[in-house]
Image 1 (cartoon, rainbow, N blue to C red):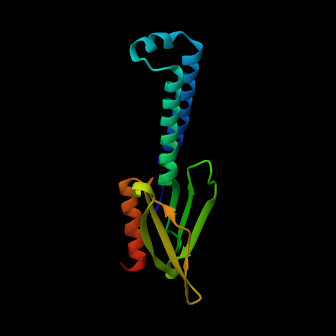
Image 2 (spheres, rainbow, N blue to C red):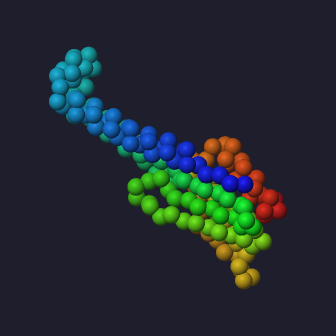
Image 3 (cartoon, rainbow, N blue to C red):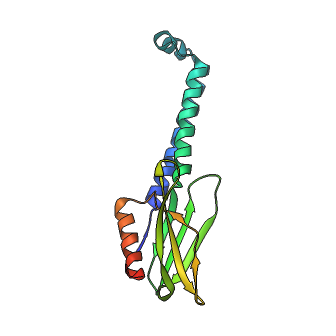
Length: 162
């Protein structure tokens, strides 16, 4: 089985960029045009306060994806090995990690729910190597669709004997 969540990655990155552009354009229009005078008449909110509210909303949206650790994931179990490639979709963590485990050496996996409000769901895979169990870095499956998540866990279950 082979899949990746490239479509989800593109959607999340596009949303971040679109939201940033909308906030920038609205803030620019507020300070450049007279439109805000009409809005102020009805709302009573100052330009500065409205700008702070918009920027806070953008920051909350961005932090949500950081806490959730939304990640690009590529999974391939063809050719006698399990290959998992992943990286987080945030500006601060650009590390791209690849785990290649021969099927015969796969020792199982563990799911952990972490982060504030349990937004993040991580999977840690294990490998048998020279009589020891080696732990690979955990990867977040929070950005996977329910179908992708189900396929991934079902495939990992089949190799771990669960």
